Length: 338
Figure 1 (cartoon, helix red, strand yellow):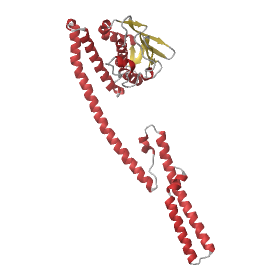
Figure 2 (spheres, one colour):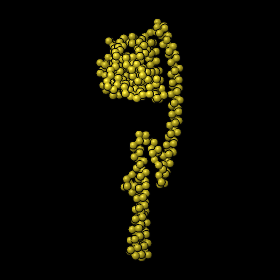
Figure 3 (cartoon, helix red, strand yellow):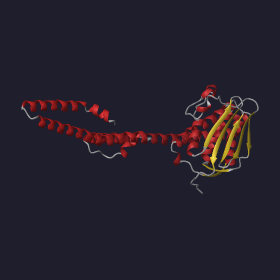
């Protein structure tokens, strides 16, 4: 709040004071008052109005500057009311009360939408669990009676399973702290589960599944890590080449972390798409080739890795390779559940 702006806002008041002063001077001269009295009254009026303006400006500038500075400093500006004290001047009281009512209304509306969103998420989770029952039955039927299914039907069942899992983990990732369980797990066990789950589609797609040096322990959530790796492997299968295709998993260690690398020799990712590869619903060039791409898989993987305090990155050269790295910090603090 600048003093000049404050004076501009008070220009009508100052003009009225000037008009009143001229009127008083006219009356003083009309009654033939002495020059000394006229000067004394003029000085007194000038000092009075100056003090009134300075006092009014001082008490307002303190409040409004504090309000503006707090709004600019806060990440969530709507919480500014929590940082303020009710001012002593009337205009400030009106503003403070208005902010209180606005804040109260916003919180009530947020709570209403939060309840609706939570109800919707609960419904989605329940729906997913219900859908998984017939899907599990279909998967079991496929394993027991493979002669009844052709290659396309097997892929469709697997694809439905993957999309249902994707929805489930997307919903859960919004409230990750309620679902994940950090413990010491062996990466090789997680990879074995993934290999078993994808063995049919790997064989049918003629993709070699190579594993090297993955027998290491890290702190993570095994279920969430399995989903992340599975999503990446599914992408590698989806975008694999027709000949000599492979997916290779290996780990390496430096001073402060372990890194799991998932590498394939598929069609790769264009360099222009790499900066946006983890954006929500981003499909890029390869997504236009594969019409069934949703652009959600890597977004969810990135979100889950962030929640778990892991780092995920991708490097790729088109028509040569794609290399996904997941880094697990060794020295990070976790509440390990025994």
